[in-house]
Length: 326
Image 1: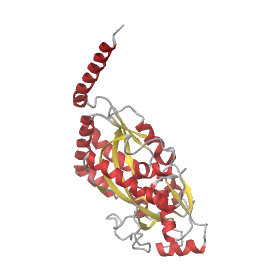
Image 2: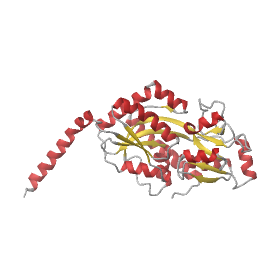
Image 3: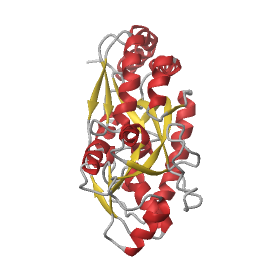
Image 4: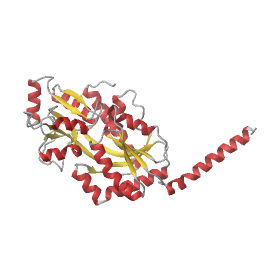
Protein backbone atom coordinates (compact mmCIF):
# COMPACT_ATOMS: atom_id res chain seq x y z
CA UNK A 1 0.00 0.00 0.00
CA UNK A 2 1.37 3.45 -0.89
CA UNK A 3 2.47 5.75 1.92
CA UNK A 4 0.81 9.15 2.27
CA UNK A 5 3.96 10.81 0.86
CA UNK A 6 3.93 8.64 -2.23
CA UNK A 7 0.21 9.26 -2.70
CA UNK A 8 0.83 13.02 -2.40
CA UNK A 9 3.66 12.90 -4.92
CA UNK A 10 1.50 10.83 -7.28
CA UNK A 11 -1.35 13.37 -7.02
CA UNK A 12 1.00 16.29 -7.64
CA UNK A 13 2.50 14.51 -10.64
CA UNK A 14 -0.98 13.87 -12.04
CA UNK A 15 -1.90 17.54 -11.67
CA UNK A 16 1.32 18.56 -13.40
CA UNK A 17 0.64 16.22 -16.30
CA UNK A 18 -2.93 17.54 -16.55
CA UNK A 19 -1.75 21.15 -16.57
CA UNK A 20 0.88 20.39 -19.16
CA UNK A 21 -1.70 18.70 -21.34
CA UNK A 22 -3.85 21.83 -21.69
CA UNK A 23 -1.78 23.37 -24.49
CA UNK A 24 -1.80 20.02 -26.31
CA UNK A 25 -5.54 19.72 -25.86
CA UNK A 26 -5.99 23.21 -27.26
CA UNK A 27 -3.65 22.48 -30.15
CA UNK A 28 -5.60 19.33 -31.08
CA UNK A 29 -8.96 20.93 -30.33
CA UNK A 30 -11.42 20.30 -31.80
CA UNK A 31 -11.13 16.72 -33.01
CA UNK A 32 -14.83 15.88 -32.89
CA UNK A 33 -18.14 17.75 -33.30
CA UNK A 34 -19.02 20.52 -30.83
CA UNK A 35 -22.53 20.90 -29.42
CA UNK A 36 -23.98 24.41 -29.22
CA UNK A 37 -26.97 24.41 -26.89
CA UNK A 38 -29.60 27.00 -27.77
CA UNK A 39 -31.90 27.08 -24.72
CA UNK A 40 -35.07 27.93 -26.64
CA UNK A 41 -37.30 26.37 -29.29
CA UNK A 42 -36.31 26.74 -32.97
CA UNK A 43 -37.53 29.82 -34.81
CA UNK A 44 -36.62 32.46 -32.24
CA UNK A 45 -33.84 35.04 -32.27
CA UNK A 46 -31.39 32.83 -30.37
CA UNK A 47 -31.70 30.12 -33.03
CA UNK A 48 -31.31 32.66 -35.83
CA UNK A 49 -28.18 34.16 -34.25
CA UNK A 50 -26.75 30.82 -33.09
CA UNK A 51 -27.16 29.11 -36.44
CA UNK A 52 -25.76 32.15 -38.18
CA UNK A 53 -22.42 31.96 -36.39
CA UNK A 54 -22.27 28.15 -35.96
CA UNK A 55 -22.01 27.49 -39.68
CA UNK A 56 -19.10 29.90 -40.18
CA UNK A 57 -17.30 28.77 -37.02
CA UNK A 58 -17.64 25.14 -38.16
CA UNK A 59 -15.95 26.09 -41.41
CA UNK A 60 -13.11 27.89 -39.62
CA UNK A 61 -12.60 25.17 -37.00
CA UNK A 62 -12.77 22.28 -39.44
CA UNK A 63 -15.29 20.49 -37.21
CA UNK A 64 -19.06 20.58 -37.19
CA UNK A 65 -20.89 22.64 -34.57
CA UNK A 66 -24.17 20.82 -33.94
CA UNK A 67 -27.17 22.88 -32.79
CA UNK A 68 -29.12 21.43 -29.85
CA UNK A 69 -32.34 23.33 -29.02
CA UNK A 70 -33.27 22.70 -25.36
CA UNK A 71 -36.20 24.94 -24.35
CA UNK A 72 -37.77 25.17 -20.92
CA UNK A 73 -38.18 27.47 -17.90
CA UNK A 74 -37.28 30.66 -19.73
CA UNK A 75 -34.12 29.12 -21.19
CA UNK A 76 -32.72 28.07 -17.82
CA UNK A 77 -33.07 24.33 -18.50
CA UNK A 78 -30.64 24.27 -21.40
CA UNK A 79 -28.34 26.84 -19.80
CA UNK A 80 -28.12 24.82 -16.58
CA UNK A 81 -27.33 21.68 -18.58
CA UNK A 82 -24.30 23.40 -20.10
CA UNK A 83 -23.17 24.74 -16.72
CA UNK A 84 -23.06 21.14 -15.47
CA UNK A 85 -21.34 19.75 -18.60
CA UNK A 86 -17.73 18.66 -18.86
CA UNK A 87 -15.49 21.73 -19.31
CA UNK A 88 -13.72 20.33 -22.36
CA UNK A 89 -14.86 22.80 -25.03
CA UNK A 90 -17.26 20.37 -26.67
CA UNK A 91 -20.44 21.74 -25.09
CA UNK A 92 -21.18 25.46 -25.48
CA UNK A 93 -24.22 27.63 -24.85
CA UNK A 94 -25.69 30.54 -26.76
CA UNK A 95 -25.66 33.14 -24.00
CA UNK A 96 -28.60 35.52 -23.95
CA UNK A 97 -30.03 38.33 -21.85
CA UNK A 98 -32.97 36.15 -20.86
CA UNK A 99 -30.80 33.38 -19.44
CA UNK A 100 -27.70 35.12 -18.08
CA UNK A 101 -29.30 38.36 -16.86
CA UNK A 102 -32.99 37.66 -16.15
CA UNK A 103 -33.22 33.97 -15.25
CA UNK A 104 -31.06 34.09 -12.11
CA UNK A 105 -33.30 36.83 -10.64
CA UNK A 106 -36.62 35.35 -11.74
CA UNK A 107 -36.05 31.70 -10.86
CA UNK A 108 -35.14 30.85 -7.29
CA UNK A 109 -33.75 27.53 -8.48
CA UNK A 110 -32.24 28.49 -11.82
CA UNK A 111 -29.43 26.09 -11.01
CA UNK A 112 -26.49 28.22 -12.10
CA UNK A 113 -24.63 31.43 -11.35
CA UNK A 114 -23.97 33.48 -14.52
CA UNK A 115 -20.72 34.81 -13.08
CA UNK A 116 -19.27 31.63 -11.55
CA UNK A 117 -20.55 28.72 -13.64
CA UNK A 118 -19.45 29.80 -17.11
CA UNK A 119 -16.29 30.65 -18.99
CA UNK A 120 -17.34 33.55 -21.26
CA UNK A 121 -16.00 33.14 -24.79
CA UNK A 122 -17.14 36.38 -26.38
CA UNK A 123 -20.08 38.55 -27.27
CA UNK A 124 -21.84 38.16 -30.61
CA UNK A 125 -24.12 41.18 -30.85
CA UNK A 126 -27.27 42.90 -29.70
CA UNK A 127 -30.75 43.60 -30.99
CA UNK A 128 -33.81 45.27 -29.51
CA UNK A 129 -37.14 43.61 -29.04
CA UNK A 130 -39.99 44.78 -31.22
CA UNK A 131 -43.53 45.46 -30.07
CA UNK A 132 -45.57 43.80 -32.81
CA UNK A 133 -49.32 43.39 -33.24
CA UNK A 134 -51.66 41.49 -35.52
CA UNK A 135 -52.77 43.68 -38.48
CA UNK A 136 -56.36 43.53 -37.23
CA UNK A 137 -55.47 45.04 -33.85
CA UNK A 138 -57.06 48.52 -33.63
CA UNK A 139 -54.04 50.33 -32.19
CA UNK A 140 -51.61 51.70 -34.77
CA UNK A 141 -49.23 53.39 -32.33
CA UNK A 142 -47.96 52.95 -28.79
CA UNK A 143 -50.14 55.85 -27.65
CA UNK A 144 -53.22 54.21 -29.17
CA UNK A 145 -52.26 50.88 -27.60
CA UNK A 146 -51.96 52.45 -24.16
CA UNK A 147 -55.31 54.21 -24.58
CA UNK A 148 -56.97 50.99 -25.78
CA UNK A 149 -55.55 48.98 -22.87
CA UNK A 150 -56.79 51.57 -20.38
CA UNK A 151 -60.27 51.37 -21.91
CA UNK A 152 -60.13 47.55 -21.81
CA UNK A 153 -58.27 46.71 -18.59
CA UNK A 154 -57.14 43.10 -18.32
CA UNK A 155 -58.42 42.25 -21.80
CA UNK A 156 -55.28 42.82 -23.88
CA UNK A 157 -52.85 39.91 -23.91
CA UNK A 158 -49.27 39.65 -25.12
CA UNK A 159 -47.23 36.62 -26.07
CA UNK A 160 -43.65 35.92 -25.06
CA UNK A 161 -40.98 33.25 -25.51
CA UNK A 162 -41.87 31.93 -22.06
CA UNK A 163 -42.18 32.91 -18.43
CA UNK A 164 -39.05 34.71 -17.31
CA UNK A 165 -37.69 35.40 -20.78
CA UNK A 166 -36.58 38.85 -21.92
CA UNK A 167 -39.76 39.26 -23.95
CA UNK A 168 -41.86 38.46 -20.88
CA UNK A 169 -40.07 40.86 -18.53
CA UNK A 170 -40.01 43.52 -21.27
CA UNK A 171 -43.80 43.23 -21.55
CA UNK A 172 -44.28 43.50 -17.79
CA UNK A 173 -41.83 46.41 -17.67
CA UNK A 174 -43.74 48.15 -20.48
CA UNK A 175 -47.14 47.63 -18.81
CA UNK A 176 -45.90 48.96 -15.49
CA UNK A 177 -44.16 51.96 -17.13
CA UNK A 178 -47.27 52.80 -19.20
CA UNK A 179 -49.68 52.33 -16.31
CA UNK A 180 -51.72 49.63 -18.03
CA UNK A 181 -52.70 46.01 -17.38
CA UNK A 182 -51.68 43.30 -19.86
CA UNK A 183 -52.30 39.54 -19.70
CA UNK A 184 -49.17 37.46 -20.25
CA UNK A 185 -49.42 34.37 -22.52
CA UNK A 186 -46.20 32.31 -22.31
CA UNK A 187 -45.00 30.06 -25.13
CA UNK A 188 -42.09 27.64 -25.50
CA UNK A 189 -40.09 30.09 -27.57
CA UNK A 190 -40.51 33.14 -29.78
CA UNK A 191 -41.27 31.02 -32.83
CA UNK A 192 -44.46 29.45 -31.40
CA UNK A 193 -45.57 32.84 -30.03
CA UNK A 194 -45.26 34.47 -33.46
CA UNK A 195 -47.13 31.61 -35.12
CA UNK A 196 -50.09 32.26 -32.81
CA UNK A 197 -49.78 36.03 -33.27
CA UNK A 198 -49.82 35.73 -37.06
CA UNK A 199 -52.77 33.39 -36.75
CA UNK A 200 -54.70 35.99 -34.77
CA UNK A 201 -54.86 33.95 -31.55
CA UNK A 202 -53.17 36.73 -29.56
CA UNK A 203 -53.18 40.46 -30.41
CA UNK A 204 -49.58 41.42 -29.64
CA UNK A 205 -46.14 40.23 -28.60
CA UNK A 206 -42.68 41.43 -27.70
CA UNK A 207 -40.29 39.66 -30.07
CA UNK A 208 -36.63 40.16 -31.00
CA UNK A 209 -36.23 41.91 -34.35
CA UNK A 210 -34.25 38.97 -35.82
CA UNK A 211 -37.39 36.85 -35.38
CA UNK A 212 -40.07 39.41 -36.31
CA UNK A 213 -38.71 41.62 -39.06
CA UNK A 214 -39.48 39.27 -41.98
CA UNK A 215 -43.13 39.19 -40.99
CA UNK A 216 -43.19 42.94 -40.44
CA UNK A 217 -41.70 43.45 -43.90
CA UNK A 218 -44.19 40.99 -45.35
CA UNK A 219 -47.16 42.72 -43.77
CA UNK A 220 -48.29 39.77 -41.63
CA UNK A 221 -47.35 41.75 -38.51
CA UNK A 222 -47.33 45.45 -37.70
CA UNK A 223 -44.49 46.91 -35.63
CA UNK A 224 -45.50 49.67 -33.24
CA UNK A 225 -42.11 50.26 -31.61
CA UNK A 226 -38.67 48.93 -30.74
CA UNK A 227 -37.42 48.60 -27.17
CA UNK A 228 -33.95 50.14 -27.52
CA UNK A 229 -33.00 53.78 -26.89
CA UNK A 230 -32.25 54.31 -30.59
CA UNK A 231 -34.14 53.16 -33.67
CA UNK A 232 -33.20 49.99 -35.48
CA UNK A 233 -31.43 50.39 -38.81
CA UNK A 234 -33.57 47.54 -40.06
CA UNK A 235 -36.82 49.31 -39.10
CA UNK A 236 -35.85 53.00 -39.34
CA UNK A 237 -39.47 54.18 -39.56
CA UNK A 238 -40.48 52.41 -36.36
CA UNK A 239 -40.08 54.61 -33.25
CA UNK A 240 -38.61 53.56 -29.95
CA UNK A 241 -41.01 53.05 -27.05
CA UNK A 242 -39.32 56.02 -25.34
CA UNK A 243 -40.04 58.21 -28.38
CA UNK A 244 -43.60 56.94 -28.54
CA UNK A 245 -44.61 58.11 -25.09
CA UNK A 246 -42.84 56.06 -22.39
CA UNK A 247 -39.76 58.16 -21.50
CA UNK A 248 -36.59 56.35 -20.45
CA UNK A 249 -37.72 52.92 -21.65
CA UNK A 250 -34.78 50.68 -22.66
CA UNK A 251 -34.73 46.90 -23.04
CA UNK A 252 -32.13 45.68 -25.55
CA UNK A 253 -31.08 42.03 -25.94
CA UNK A 254 -27.52 40.69 -26.10
CA UNK A 255 -26.09 37.42 -27.38
CA UNK A 256 -22.77 35.69 -26.76
CA UNK A 257 -20.99 32.35 -26.48
CA UNK A 258 -20.01 30.67 -23.22
CA UNK A 259 -18.58 27.37 -22.04
CA UNK A 260 -18.75 25.64 -18.65
CA UNK A 261 -16.49 27.11 -15.96
CA UNK A 262 -13.15 25.37 -15.88
CA UNK A 263 -12.80 25.10 -19.66
CA UNK A 264 -9.03 25.45 -20.34
CA UNK A 265 -8.10 29.00 -21.22
CA UNK A 266 -6.27 27.99 -24.43
CA UNK A 267 -9.53 26.47 -25.70
CA UNK A 268 -11.50 29.56 -24.69
CA UNK A 269 -8.97 31.75 -26.50
CA UNK A 270 -9.15 29.59 -29.62
CA UNK A 271 -12.95 29.76 -29.65
CA UNK A 272 -12.84 33.51 -29.08
CA UNK A 273 -10.52 33.99 -32.05
CA UNK A 274 -12.68 31.84 -34.30
CA UNK A 275 -15.83 33.63 -33.12
CA UNK A 276 -14.28 37.03 -33.86
CA UNK A 277 -13.07 35.84 -37.26
CA UNK A 278 -16.59 34.60 -38.02
CA UNK A 279 -18.13 37.91 -36.96
CA UNK A 280 -15.60 39.78 -39.11
CA UNK A 281 -16.62 37.86 -42.21
CA UNK A 282 -18.81 39.71 -44.66
CA UNK A 283 -21.33 36.87 -44.91
CA UNK A 284 -21.99 36.66 -41.15
CA UNK A 285 -22.08 40.44 -40.72
CA UNK A 286 -24.53 40.68 -43.60
CA UNK A 287 -26.66 37.77 -42.35
CA UNK A 288 -26.92 39.03 -38.77
CA UNK A 289 -27.37 42.63 -39.91
CA UNK A 290 -30.21 41.63 -42.21
CA UNK A 291 -31.98 40.22 -39.16
CA UNK A 292 -31.44 43.36 -37.08
CA UNK A 293 -28.50 42.19 -34.98
CA UNK A 294 -25.59 44.62 -34.51
CA UNK A 295 -22.29 42.74 -34.28
CA UNK A 296 -20.30 43.59 -31.13
CA UNK A 297 -17.26 41.30 -30.81
CA UNK A 298 -14.86 41.41 -27.88
CA UNK A 299 -12.59 39.46 -25.55
CA UNK A 300 -13.67 36.88 -22.95
CA UNK A 301 -13.00 39.54 -20.30
CA UNK A 302 -15.24 42.03 -22.12
CA UNK A 303 -18.08 39.52 -22.13
CA UNK A 304 -17.55 38.60 -18.47
CA UNK A 305 -17.73 42.28 -17.50
CA UNK A 306 -20.85 42.74 -19.61
CA UNK A 307 -22.62 39.72 -18.07
CA UNK A 308 -22.05 41.24 -14.63
CA UNK A 309 -23.46 44.64 -15.64
CA UNK A 310 -26.38 43.19 -17.62
CA UNK A 311 -27.47 40.93 -14.76
CA UNK A 312 -27.51 43.89 -12.35
CA UNK A 313 -29.57 45.95 -14.81
CA UNK A 314 -32.18 43.28 -15.48
CA UNK A 315 -32.42 42.30 -11.82
CA UNK A 316 -33.63 45.87 -11.23
CA UNK A 317 -36.09 45.58 -14.15
CA UNK A 318 -37.44 42.30 -12.76
CA UNK A 319 -38.09 44.01 -9.44
CA UNK A 320 -39.58 47.08 -11.15
CA UNK A 321 -41.86 44.90 -13.28
CA UNK A 322 -43.56 43.50 -10.20
CA UNK A 323 -42.99 39.89 -11.30
CA UNK A 324 -42.38 37.63 -8.32
CA UNK A 325 -39.50 35.12 -8.45
CA UNK A 326 -40.71 31.61 -9.21
